[in-house]
Image 1: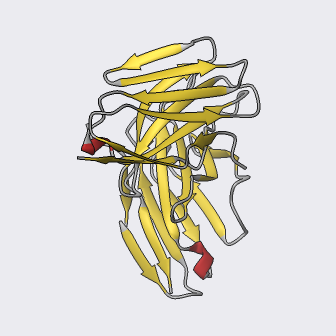
Image 2: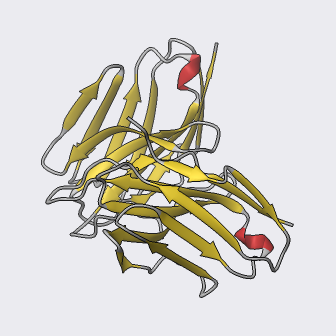
Length: 115
Length: 111
């Protein structure tokens, strides 16, 4: 079946512009995660959705970052007034959610470059 | 903050050799997962081991978990050039449902 998809795959933007990143999770996966990965680094947790609600937004680095999820499916991560330090690969993952933790399925990521 | 930390940061071996990577963590966990990442893109799940398990196998992969030492190891036997990738451990604690990833081990397998 179809995996997690993300768009765009690459985005180059000028400092100060807003960007929207999109994630389409696997159908039926109730949990959705956004991570950020800078060059050669590990994954930095940003936000987690359970259904349409976000019980944990603790990873969002500043109030310029926001995310929403509608219909328990597609999620968008918005970065306002982008800064050069926002340049990174933004990864989305989805998983089933129940009494146990299930493996996460990752999308290919969006590489964001802020010039 | 990182919960799991992989060791070594980088590993370079010849094809056919075994590769061992370690992950240490600080707090009690429910489970630990290993993922592989090629070319800085999406991660692929390899193995999940629960806190009450000590060893799991999947093909050429063997994962061990020692909760008393708060550590896990990933062994890749008979490595291939295609195993070249970054390997990450991810731990989940409490009821968070949010795996915390380490910085990864970069493995290079020379043909």
